[in-house]
Image (cartoon, rainbow, N blue to C red; front, side):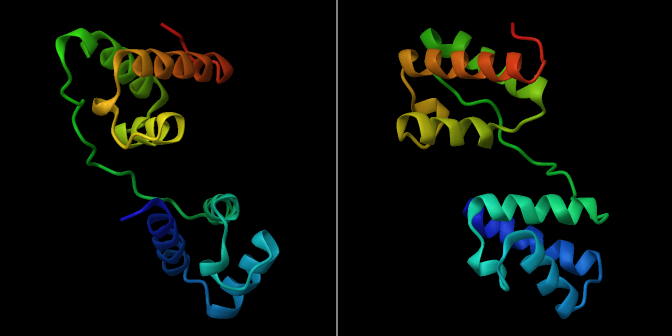
Length: 137
């Protein structure tokens, strides 16, 4: 399931959990995102709607399953270990790192990155940690 479909599913689950009637739901979409249907949401507006639903009292369930650390060649294990530490410190899943790999290098999975690319990802995560007041190993 792609990210857009996952987020739209979350919106509809929140609508049900909060027992929003159709008129209230559509009014909220119009107020927050300027649309009358969730299918018209951009990624930024989708995030705003999810934030509003949380503000209204929806408590999303935490994902219990994540994938294990990727298996890589011994020469890249240390870099992957650093990435794993940054993800754990920030409370993020490997899917976040896979998304970074896709945005930064047009590669779908972290384990497919070469050592130079992994080093760049560690640098980006270090910057993110400092920016958000977390420990940067």
